[in-house]
Length: 249
Image 1 (cartoon, rainbow, N blue to C red):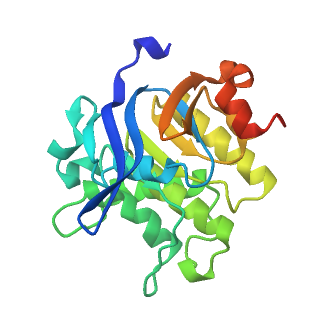
Image 2 (cartoon, rainbow, N blue to C red; image 1 turned 90 degrees about the horizontal axis):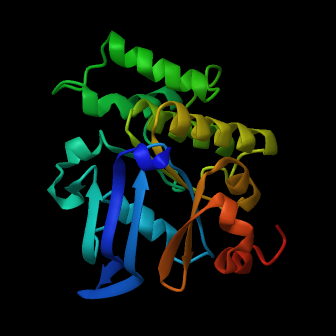
């Protein structure tokens, strides 16, 4: 049960946003929440509500404006970037590219935190990389350039990279956006299995509310500059969730 699992992420007094012209722009305020090993959490909210800002702040891409984010009991600001890369993997919506960068190269980048000073890939690294490629169904595509991949295959490549990173925490921002119907379900089944079988803490932002209800065990609802964490079983009686779904679920 979740109560027996260890805390992965804890946020106390969190104020999230960004700085512009030496001024703090606050998007989320007074965030108090905690996520545990084995949690599969759906992050939901209207466009512009602060979901991506929250994800970027939790993984250290954005500096928290106030409060604290703890990763496995340590403040995120005290964790060196090289160590943080072994704790949190994130899949963002933005596309990356590079000169002659293949799908395999992108997935292999997930193992960089575990290589030597020269980032040389050894047999043990290649085994993990190839397993991630197989899990995400990229066996026939991993030698293609990133620029040659469809949106769906590119998304699967980024997910494979996060799996190859072997972190106890995975954050995914709209990972199902470019996938076909069957692939969406396959992705959510994969993420659910990672949380239940490998005890990872998985947080996924998505507008596919029906998939979140089907596969997640918790929902983090972002609304009115705040958040609330609920069990999926409470969703259909939750006022904030019903506002979000407009009664269609």
